[in-house]
Image (cartoon, rainbow, N blue to C red; front, side, top):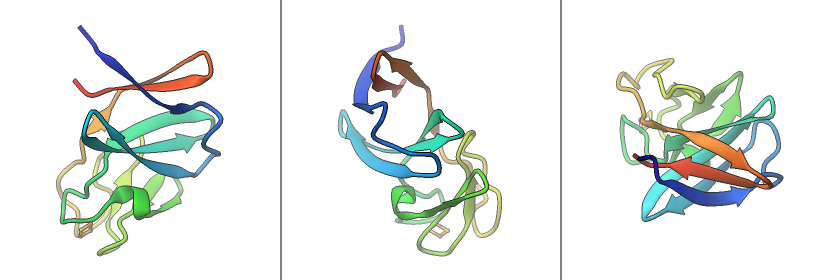
Length: 103
Ligand code: FES
């Protein structure tokens, strides 16, 4: 069964913004794109960098360390040097809260 965790207020983010969170001890980067929310594991698959410190543009987040790009919606790598996907987590909005599932 999916276990949902309270993450943030639904109005805490604007489009193209990202927020770094700790959900049950797991680092999560929460994004808003065109009014929808997406969550990725907040660690680049290439190295020790937080994607929540990255720059968001055109549906991707640019890693702050080596400027690799990751698709915010899927976690798929979009440019070198990132070759492995970043785990994405399900997100839902319940009332005025955003919830994230880690399993
Ligand atoms: Fe993210 Fe190298 S650590 S691109």
